[in-house]
Image (cartoon, rainbow, N blue to C red):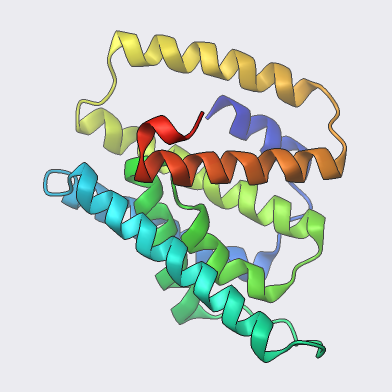
Length: 193
């Protein structure tokens, strides 16, 4: 959450208002659904759900690429049904495994937002999701001294990394590696090293 504040300060003027009008309610719905179902969801169920989302995203991307080879597909406009569905699912999977990226990407990437606007909208959405998770996690008894100490160390590392300037291409490569490691960890925890 601490690194989210730095990102919010940096990108506070660049987000897409049309998308955030849809994604803010989606974040609330997804986190509330996660809180309400936390006692019934287990790790194998979550892995299957996130895996299916990743497969849907990949197949959709591949089919679209095959269908439009050589043509320029128009950007998709923000939509309430898709935004609430995919954004809510992104917040829901983020509640359990911090793996909301694939579902969110299914909604946001077809819009072909400018890079800075995409980054700002994404950062603000997930910062909101992370802030909404705090009271739910507290109510579920998820905060212990051990995991708060781990969070403090990770925040220090994250804040120091944000303090440095990273070239866009390096940042993209880093995010791709982190996303790949995250998906690998969901399927087989020892594979993401």
